[in-house]
Length: 533
Ligand code: G4P
Image (cartoon, rainbow, N blue to C red; front, side, top):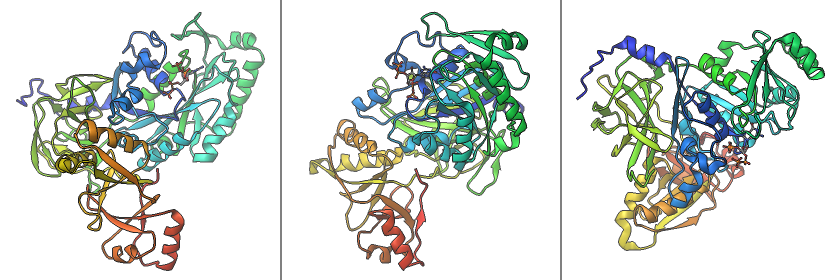
């Protein structure tokens, strides 16, 4: 089954890994993520014509902006992978769910990428969700390339935007190109590295490719007038203050290359694509739970970053998304599930491209493989071939919303338990239990309230066990331990529960002031903050 007809070895794996760029776009809703995704894919010629079908609805199949559809079908918000080749590079663009209601799914996607594009709306700069997502990148030390979008519309001054990035998130911006003409009167881009100028002109009536024209600098200086003078003065200022790219600082997440453009008319998208290929890191050895690096060319190992059920009516199954971390994956391999030691067959392995799926025969570090019906596999789990390894769990965010679930019809108790377990394994919500509440009344915890809608719909439609959810007055959770638990349980307004997935002891509080008061009164208690969303 796992014969290796190509006779591939470590050299092949290293070469394939080296050309891969696995990344995500982080942004606030409406900044233009779908548009940019499409424009990137267009440049890479993966799809025929961006904007050929106007509006979001027509783009869904391509960019996997499935939100509404999925809500109406009552399943979780999904992520998928867009893959395209550019030059010699192979890009895997992992979609992050783009809804204002921040969910843990996004975090998990960021656990599977090697780099990110931070997309800013030129008129809005850093927005709430961008900040949250950037925090995740910082936490995971993911290098970030910044793209300032919508330059064709009135917006803010470029220097002001750079300043905001530096002041608010401490990321030193290093522009790779510089706009000629203010936001709303976009003329073109000066490439900082060599001073070359690309002028953009809209195509009549088109949301499609803009006409890009290389214009010699002296001619541009004469033709663009004041806009040119301003841009060159600003560039001189950037040189003076040393706003240049430091690759080490970029790799460790303290410096960000910045590019300007407009995704919709396709201004500056190619420069971004080239920057991703040139600057974003290829897959590197991933640390295991003991901190030892698994070489990229080691036998296959991958980490599950998402488990998704019912993605498609045509595929009513449960798909585990596995990020390949080392080695060559071959369909048909029998892998070991690190958490249980159980074997896992992969003869139905798939790629997930937008909404479409097809069989995948081989994959390399940086790629994403979909394994249908990977029973018992949870988010964060490791799968490996030959040489055992376990990667560290993907940390869960601190939940801020809590509901207690009851099955509506006691005759469906078995289905209820099965459904809740499944949603827990997928990471739709965190499931917390306590002896006090009993098995029939698990507490469901989530970062965003939307997850509860998903639970309600899926419990009814998929598991045949409609539920009643009752809100609990908690907003804050801390990790604690068995020693502190009895003391905490005795505190007013505090409850202690066990997280089913990993057995962690979790204390929940009405608000953070209550936590602070208890910390002051009883400094010996264990109260560890969870990752903030
Ligand atoms: P999102 O996925 O981040 O939520 O954003 P999306 O791409 O859907 O873009 C949000 C809106 O911003 C869309 O307009 C889109 O056309 C517009 N947009 C994106 N990039 C640019 C750009 O570079 N310049 C300009 N002028 N507009 C841009 P919409 O009217 O909300 O939707 P649609 O019906 O046009 O798709």
